[in-house]
Amino acid sequence: MPTYRQPGTVLTDYRFTVPLDHADPGGEQIEVYAREVVAVGREHDELPWLLFLQGGPGNRSPRPEGRGGWLGRALDGYRVLLLDQRGTGRSTPANRQTLPRRGDAAAQADYLAHFRADSIVRDAELIRRELLGEDEKWSVLGQSYGGFCTLTYLSYAPQGLREAFVTGGLAGLRSTATDVYRAAYPRVQRKVEAHYARYPEDVETVRAVVRHLREREVRLPGGGLLTAEAFQALGNMLGTSNGSHTLHYLVEDAFLAGDELSDTFLAQVQGHLSYASAPLYAVLHESIYGQRSASPAATGWAAEAVRAEFPRFDVDAALAEDRPVLLTGEMIYPWMFTTDPALAPLREVADLLARREDWPDLYDPAQLARNEVPVVAAVYHDDMYVDTADSLATAGAVRGLRTWITNEYEHEGLRSSGGRVLDRLIRMAREEI
Image 1 (cartoon, rainbow, N blue to C red):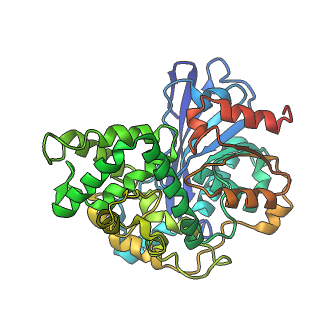
Image 2 (cartoon, helix red, strand yellow):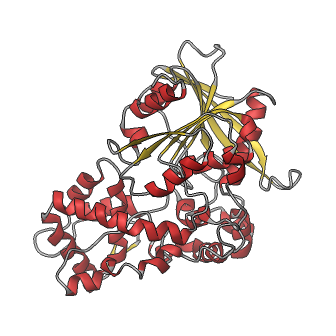
Image 3 (cartoon, rainbow, N blue to C red):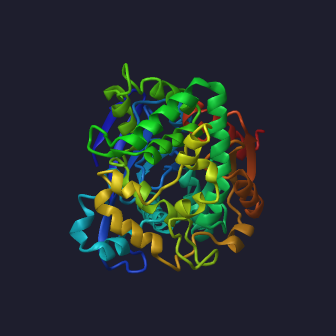
């Protein structure tokens, strides 16, 4: 177990062997990586553990660079474990380079069916018992999709938890993928309209860019195809605290003198649109809503299917009617597996997962209704990614859950608040406020 130091912290690497399928503990094994972080001088103290579950799906845990932000606040009282959820970071990888080794697309899809929240929680329980012992509990902090995983933890393994903190991650317990995206498009529209109100000059620049992309084939530096719809996906950044400003500075660099898109612009666009660093985010995104009790049907590329109900997102209609082009948000579309080189080899796999039916349930409303684990949650009232109505309904369905509802922060308030969001939740859990 390598141990090393950063300013104010001591870090230790761990690797755990876990079953691919927890229903078959003697079957194929994979590796899950985690990083312990503790404050300097407290390495040998008897501190409670705090497991951090990252947003996603498919994103690796944060890579700390010393004691700062929410991590610094957590280290005041905890020994923190940053988990690379299965398939991400330094855990056994699952991407275009490794998945073909498993066989055909059907074999790859069957493999990835074990990479949802239920498996992540079972991994966490094995790790807890190995690190802490069978009877010792730990705390959990779930950000965004990590909050979804926390609800799964509270549903199926509450005996492992002493308390739970959730930031921007109270999922609808019985919301289908169709429900999620039907609620999402109007929220995204409001965010885009707010951006254009702040930066009205971007209305015409965006129109000029999508007009250009309709008339020409444009390739990004890494070979990806930049279509008008792919450009629309840049609206995903509008759900963060500085996303509107970032988008404005990006589009203001769009053109050289004349009508040629600049290399600076194209390089920045590639950084925002490529899924090379987190392919599972795209491949698994809609399957995280699959639950047989909500709907035994397939998720079926819900974002694409529902989009037709919101014609104002149609690029060609916007150009023809001389109105602002609406950008999109946290939606995954089938065409992304054609335009993005990191996703193209996984197109058939993603389609099989989109057509997969009868996903196991991820939440147990009956268990949540009799929950005994202290739970506190930050609900961001203007959250673009997680529906507020779903979050509040879920908060009411989890016994004893306390919420802090705020529009002071956007979805990534845990990261951008400098520790203030986590501090408030900890004080709420301690009943100091």
